[in-house]
Amino acid sequence: MNFKLIFLIIMTLSVFTFGSYANKTEGIVAVINDDVIFLSELEDHIKKSGANSLKKKVKKKYLTELIDLKLLELQGRKLGIFVTDELLDSIEEDFVKRNTREALDKETERTGINLYRIRFSWRNQYLQEAISNVVLRNKIALTDKEILNYYVKNYSQINKESLANVTLIIINELESSEEKISKLRSLESNEASFNSLILEYKKNKIISEESGNLGYLNPIDLGAEIGDAIQSASLNSLIGPFSYNGSSRYFYVKDKVYSDPDFLKAKDEIREILFEEKRFLVLDDWFQGLRDGAYISERL
Picture 1 (tube, rainbow, N blue to C red):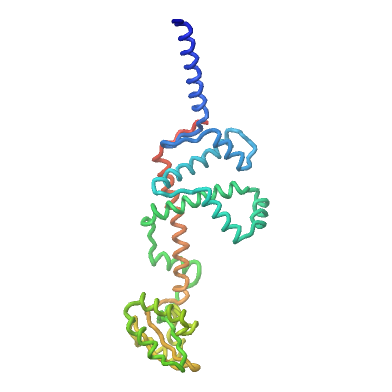
Picture 2: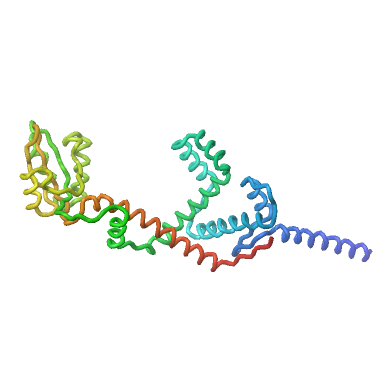
């Protein structure tokens, strides 16, 4: 047997094997937990982002973006949250419908941000919001005092008065209003069923389209007779009929409070504003914790 030939073959295979492994190692620019980012991915990301420079500082900036995205993708994978190209296509299609393709093209031209960068930000945003809805759901608390303080600081001083939350129901006087209202009376104590029947009545034109919840108001604004009746009524009760312009009007009393009507109208909007502010702060802390707890090795 030609041992020299066998030795030469073994050495040649070893060189090719080692060379192949070395190329793969050199092609890895970051390791994140049990996943990697290849140099080709980074270069493709930089090119598609519209950057021309391949200086180390530029590469590091774009590598950080890919690492942050990878962390989100790894966390999302654990929660069953994925962002596919089809989902991004759907987001883009919806965006174009609301803003037109021409407007999108003009905006990308004006800002110098291409569609790839926009879709990249959509991917990040979708993952952040989807993950935060699961992970941070019970970590954000808002108090009525916070909402009140925000209103006083950004809107106006509080001017309290007696208010009632009422639903107006209008039925044509020519028909038997009491017959149609009797079923509603039987559901007074069950608000969900009551509201469901109201929707059904409106759909079937049994009650006027003007019927519906009036929100919080001062009962006296509806007139002395109706105002007195609402103030005397118990909660979840239907009062009426009151005749007005050939129709019968009923009022369902949902709630009574002593507060500012403008504050009550703005309360949900303020809650949403404060929630978003807190969500971003909590999300930043959570993401930093995710980064700190992950194994990240940059190899630029």
